[in-house]
Length: 144
Image (cartoon, rainbow, N blue to C red):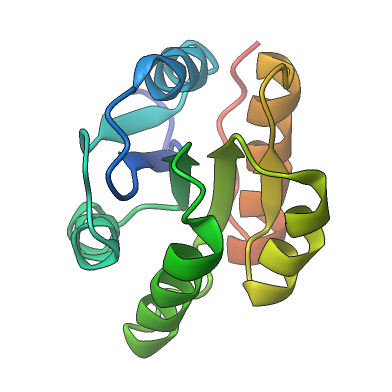
């Protein structure tokens, strides 16, 4: 890479007992296409595994895909671990089948944004770029 500017690094993880990862893989591909470095951790990840991966990879973003309905039980554990490990400057996004009434609750827990099925892939990547710049103060590579 010729530039000294750092690419955004995203951890994409399937939290909990979900067995379907097509959406997570679509998002991972779209973020790679937008110039980001993406690490997909695979199915059935625990909050501990996800936060550990974010620390090991020096991630800028944790992207959680969850379809099981356990988001209100599992996400607080992730935000707690992020604070305990001093990585609460990492952008946290959640995607999946999230009831509209739970979106603000998740944001109140520390989630930066919630993406529901049908979210525009370009809008997701643009949100991540802006959120990382705001939260981490990084210069980003131009991908266009």
